[in-house]
Image 1 (cartoon, rainbow, N blue to C red):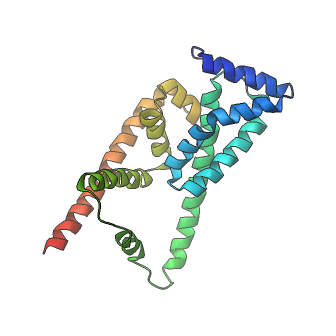
Image 2: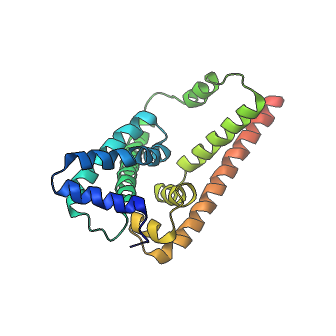
Image 3: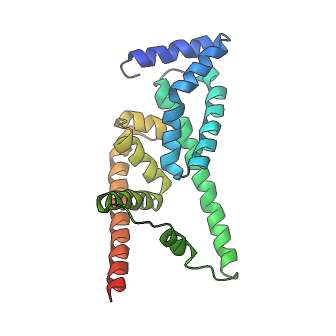
Length: 210
């Protein structure tokens, strides 16, 4: 286990107190991590209401799993792992549903253009710098949404949350030696996704100027 911080030590005190029947300890523990777990879910699904539901689901799994928590990793690492698994499971189910709906859509009415229209309708005049910042953030989120869920997860864990390779390996249940190679491939995939989006935007802008 990594070097213990005061926060890690407090986590273990709360876990032991909860196991002894102290419900207040559980409440404090969940309150300490609620915002962080919500942040993980939000960046994985990009929907506030859905992220809130997934955070609650993760918390239920955490509560049920605390009696078996071994303490071989930090409690925070274990809780992030549980939460990430909830997100990845949801994304796998969505992919299966999407494949099924695509088959049905092939024989259904044409609905192309609706997404582009809705995005265009929501655009409002803003200060130029703010618009550019919002557009850059939106492109990044769009690019993240188009890469594999496991790639998205490893990027978020490393570049956003700052976990080291050993912690990422623990969270994703993969050998530590494969984290670097997967992270490299994830960054390549993200860059290619960004380039595709920028190329598409550039083409659209050029078309609009004619």
